[in-house]
Length: 135
Image 1: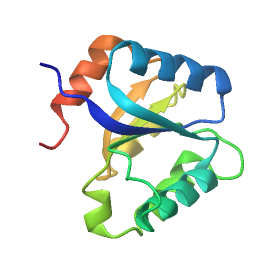
Image 2 (image 1 turned 90 degrees about the horizontal axis):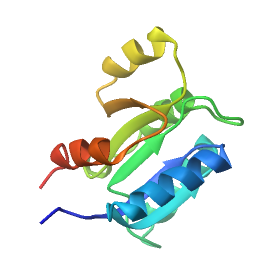
Image 3 (image 1 turned 60 degrees about the vertical axis):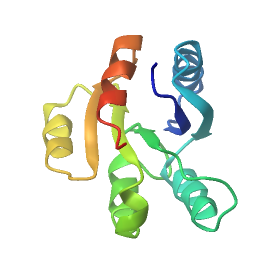
C-alpha cells in the first residue's frame, strides 16, 4: 500500500499552479492535507504557527522560486535558521517554472533542498518523492 503524507505546504504565488498541484495531490491520494502560502513570508508565518503547536508541521514543502515579497531563495535563507530538529522533519522540494540552469545548480548545492522539479508535477513524480520520505 502506498504511504500517504499527512500534510503538504505549497508555496507559490500562482493560484492556477496551486489549484493544479492540489488537485493532483488529492487525485493521487498523496496527502491528507494541502496548505498553501503565496510567498516566502506567508510560508515562514505558517511554519511559525506549526512550531507553536497550532497545527502539525508539513512533511513536504513544494517551494516556488519566483514570488513577490519573498522569493524562494530568500525563504531558504530564513528556513536554514530554523532548528535542525524541525528541518529534519520536512522534505523541501523546489517546484518551479525557472529554466535558469543556475537555479538547478544552486538547488543541488543547498543541503535542505531534497529535489528540484519543474512545474507541473505528475503522478509518477509523486511516487518518486514518496521514496525519499523518511520512515
